[in-house]
Each structure stands twice: as structure tokens, then as C-alpha cells.
Length: 275
Image (cartoon, rainbow, N blue to C red; front, side):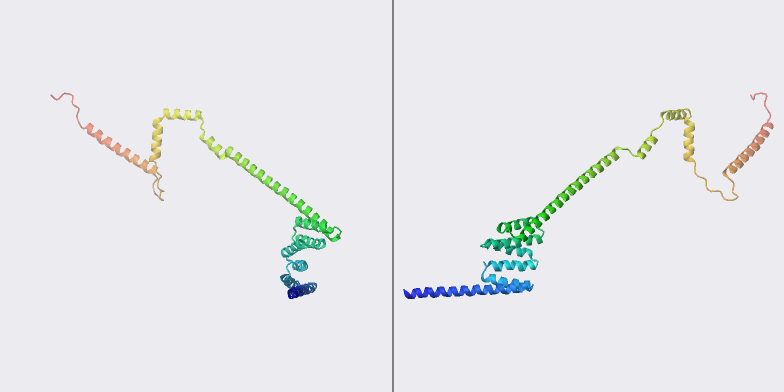
């Protein structure tokens, strides 16, 4: 019985010693990380905090400080995750206040003002006397209101632009409709030209009725008429040739009439019948 008790006591002391050594080692890693953070060696500090968390994943001090190093390295997404875990696992209001305050800072850096306002509000719920948190909360609210105003103004401008576009499209459709309904000037002129005077047609028809032969001859003459070839220098014109031919024909006729007259003169006229 005594041996068993001695064994349990020894085991407890061994575990206690190991836990103490681990805690001391974690604290040393955190301290080393804090020193590197002060020197603004944020990447090396981050490495020390991660080592500490590998030995004690629920260590809020290492979690919170890791978030600070990530924030200084401008890795705001990773930093916000570390602050969220810190406030979740924190056992006191002060720890939750610090975690929510810095969580609000990460949202401010990302210009996510609605989440920043909510984070600062939660920080004030855990410590309403912190002036810095109240200032940040007021600033986040002001930026959020300004953003909402700008968004409302932008929405109004977008609606106005859409309405103007619809009005312009409607106006264009109306103009196109007017152009389709209104006849062109050329069409009117052609219509005027196609429209004939009935009186003029009637007079023309009477003339054609009175002189159908003349119209037919004129049409035939126009169809048979061909352009004359160009006259060479010294060459007689068609009119001159025609005059000469007429003169020759007249002269030939005169000669023929004279011959015929002589034949008639030489033949005696019978007074009696030949029976």
C-alpha cells in the first residue's frame, strides 16, 4: 500500500515537473517573441509564437501576440483569426476587450466598417472606460455613415443614369417612328412626276386620233433614221447629192419626152378604119 502511494506521488511530481518545464519553455518562447517584436522583427517573432502554440495551443498570450505580429506584417486576415480565437478562449473581460479592440483594428485596415463597428462595440462591452476603444468606435461609425451616404448617392446616380438611358431609347424609338411615317421628299417628287394632267392626256389623245398616219410615219422615220457618217473634206453633202440626182433625173426626163414627141410626130394619123 505504501509502495503504491509512493508511486502515485512520484508520478504526480514527474508530471508536475514536466508541466512546469513546458510552461517555462512556452513562456521563454513568448518572451523571445516579444523581444523580436520590439525590434520589429515580426517574421521571427511570429515563428517564436507559433513554437509556443505548438506546445500549448490554448495559450492566449501566445495567440494574441501572434495576432499582433501578423497585424504588423499587414497580414490582416490571419491576424483577425488569431484575435477571434483569443476572445473566444479568454477567461476574463480584459483579455476579451483587447482581442475585440485589435479585431476592430484589422477590419478598419480592410475598410470593412460594419464589422469594425461591431468589434469595437464588443470591446466596449468588456471595458467601457477605454478611451482609445471609444475613439475608434466613433471613427468607425462616422466612416460607415459616410460610406452609406456615398453608396446612396451612387445608387441614385445609377438610377438616374438608367432612367436617362431609358428616356433616350424611348426618344430614339419615337424619332424612328416619325421618320417611317413621314414620306421622303424624293417620293413626293416622284409621285408628282408620275401624276399626269388628265386634260393634257385628253388633248394628246385627240391629236393622235386626228393624225394617226403622221404619228405612225414619224415613228417609222425615227426608227429608220440612222446617224450619218462624218463628211470628208471636199465631199458633197447628202442634200447636194440629192439635188444633183434630181437634176439628172429631170434632164433625162426632158430628153425622153423630146424623143417620144418626135416619134409621135412621124407617125401619120389614120382617118379611116382599117377594115
